[in-house]
Image 1 (tube, one colour):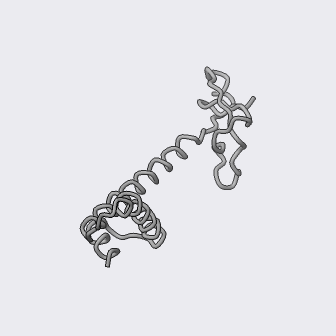
Image 2 (spheres, rainbow, N blue to C red; image 1 turned 90 degrees about the horizontal axis):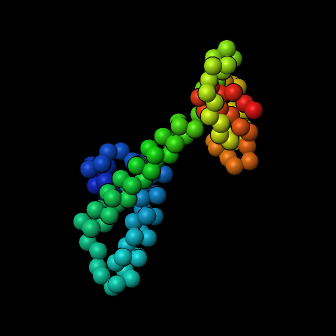
Image 3 (spheres, one colour; image 1 turned 120 degrees about the vertical axis):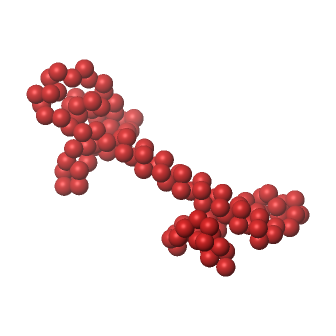
Length: 121
């Protein structure tokens, strides 16, 4: 019943999203309602679930954006000569088959790579 109400107001949910929303709603109600001996109506459960789902979806968008920003395109070597290099540490090169133009996520003890042209040190 709750799933149908949420899908009617917010769009379709995957099984994983719905399970995570239920977990978040359960924890929220236990902490904020049950702990203070308050009752929770269906309307309040739906409102809390909508808030939790909105937070989850914003978190996913932010995670995808961070991953998109961590990729560095490798420019041709002639263009690397004219670059004013800005080096950051990266974990390892991404597999050539999946993405031949980038490096994996930032890491403290990785290799130095220019974020503008992709030159390694």
